[in-house]
Image (cartoon, rainbow, N blue to C red; front, side):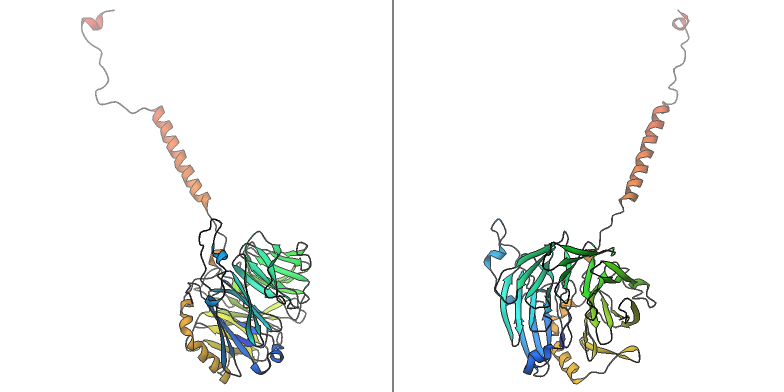
Length: 443
């Protein structure tokens, strides 16, 4: 296994669906859908972890582990050569993005070595290792689970067949800037993509060149998008402009904009002035939205009103350590993965309208024990740099320097003009006196 400065880990509990597609976040948590329990059968509920080049599945009932090391995956020699035939950077085998299918029957990941690895989860088995064109930033399965969509840094979306696990990829659509997230509508009719240039595009899946709408309004990169499961016509988006927005995505109409920096409870007085959400999680049972802000040890909880048209801020959950990721479990509450060796995983539930952490259960203790046992692989993530910092627009105040230089230039020109009008005086006594004598008196 090769090391990397940007390592990833995730913990997953088998109840509800939550993407693991997070190329910039240090950590990732995902949850398998509840109906996956019937498909998993005797294997019972399982958890998924990913730590730079390693993916681990922990089965809750059987207390067993499934581990897959990406550094051992197949690599094609030609993918490591440039146009001139010289070897290129082979990558660090770091996992950039991963996701479950809707039913939990499939799991896919992409790594820094430009590979798409597809798994079957019943039983756990690696189905294929395929090469992608560019390093990926996000991926998702279609609702039918027939294809997996992969978004990359060049702005393209490729589709790969799940039914034909060794088939090549097909280019579906493209943006002019880096893609940060991709999602599909529950009926598989639309593909939604978010890019670095503030845009959310809604394209027809059958004809991706046909654009249904744009959701415009963000003033910085769009970090995350999520189609609301209980309201499939609605979309949640977060951005580097410190806002959470609610959209009716087919028309591109913005329903609400929540300014996260102006909430009643300050996010972090000593924290960064601008931040982006690295995870949006939704709990259908309580119509709750959990928002994890990158580089801040807080989770913001909202409630989606019954009408589905408004978000109401409910509570700010504050933690003593950096939060790596969050995920909802349908019958339990909110799981929080944090940078704490003693208590890496905590569970929060609403109690009389207020979210509170609950005492550790046997399942929580067992899972936390597995995390502590692999803590050495997580230490590289401690104190890692903000994942979205490099995506902000670079602003240059060249007007100030221009005006200063202009003023200096005008002063220099003025000094030159003054010197020309009044030449410097000569040395003392330099003025010639009229000569006395015959020569002076002669004509």
